[in-house]
Length: 213
Image (tube, rainbow, N blue to C red; front, side, top):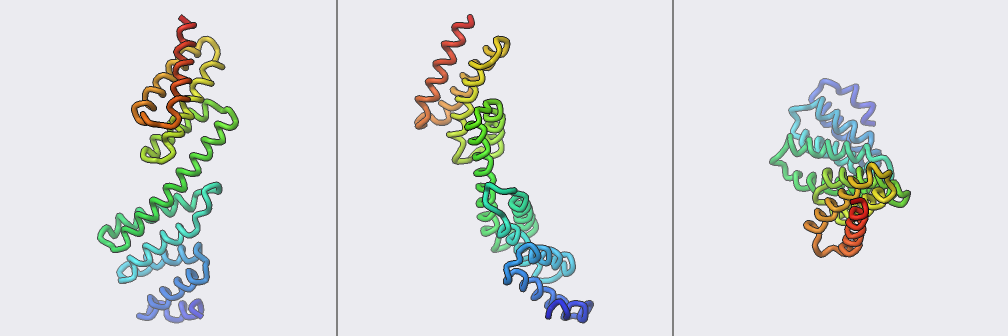
């Protein structure tokens, strides 16, 4: 019904309300992708409307609702973060800012989980270089992540295993890296459950270095 009314009332004082109601019908019928498109389009078509703030937020919220589980493609998740951040930037005094920040945190955690599982898979495949590179990148991208302790240990482990399987020309440098990663781990996680295992890799790397002297 609203689809038929939109062209009839286009340009009149009723067009804004009709389009607004039309947009919400997509949301309430569960078509979040189409609802997202129309919420965003409402903001473009009626920039002076008192409903702009609400529609701006709902645009990001629809992206959030379409965000899939962490193991799938996370394009919608990334877009949801961007749109929610854009809402916060445009309406910093809105009462919806707290909700937007909570949603962003949920979405960030989903991205963290996906990256964590990728590194875990590299470890299972004994792809030591990938564990080290992805693990170090993870720590830069998510410095406050709950997964960092475990990932830092994986980097130590992978560094040691990579070193002892290296050609002689690269062995010394890579064994020294084990020590660097271990000392950083020790300073950040002195009570870690992985500490004894990490220390074992460090001790073995030192012995290997002594043999190279």
